[in-house]
Image 1 (cartoon, rainbow, N blue to C red):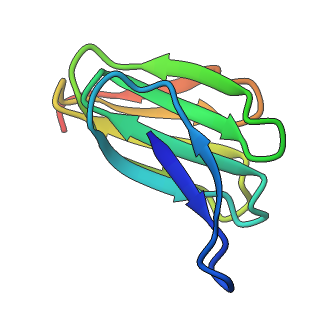
Image 2 (image 1 turned 180 degrees about the vertical axis):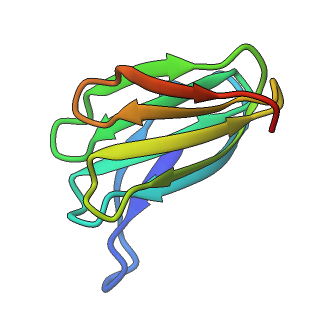
Length: 101
């Protein structure tokens, strides 16, 4: 689960369900339109905050970290499979894989 909270009020806004393993990392896009989550289930999920729609992308082993570029167009994920992958946030398409990390 990924739970979204209103920072000003402390109220839970929504729960994004879908990972079957522990969530390891979460990142918000600068415009707060997207949330990216990384999990032990080998998936990176890119969530549209407004609609709660998700794009699934992944690795072959658990995903340990995610970050979003300052312009909100790209996300990067790091995994126990020793790969770093760069993804297009809007489409979920894999842009590049960096090996040996």
